[in-house]
Length: 99
Image 1 (spheres, rainbow, N blue to C red):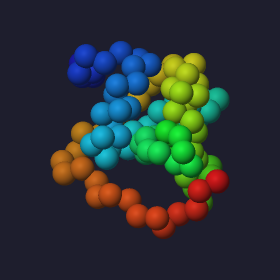
Image 2 (cartoon, one colour; image 1 turned 90 degrees about the horizontal axis):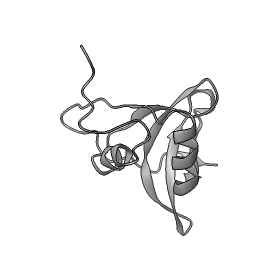
Image 3 (cartoon, one colour; image 1 turned 90 degrees about the vertical axis):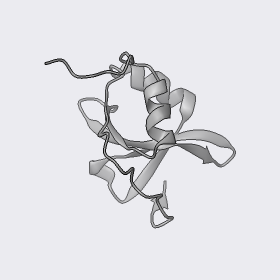
Image 4 (cartoon, one colour; image 1 turned 60 degrees about the vertical axis):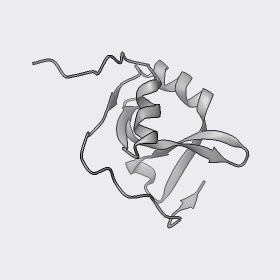
């Protein structure tokens, strides 16, 4: 059976906006031959950034400027797998270090 896409196509940033606004992380193809966790969008140091968590660098979240992130994400295929669990996870707290 085909996976439900909800009308979204590969590379459509609206799915990432939906994940971010509902506090749902998702896995994405981002770095070469590697999946990471997209945590969400938020303002940081005066600009909108995407927050990533990489299992190879798990001690820090990785902020990437939003426009740059979307362009690069599309370049890696624009894939996103989202767990639609209920309820959504709780809000994160500042218990981490930023690069």
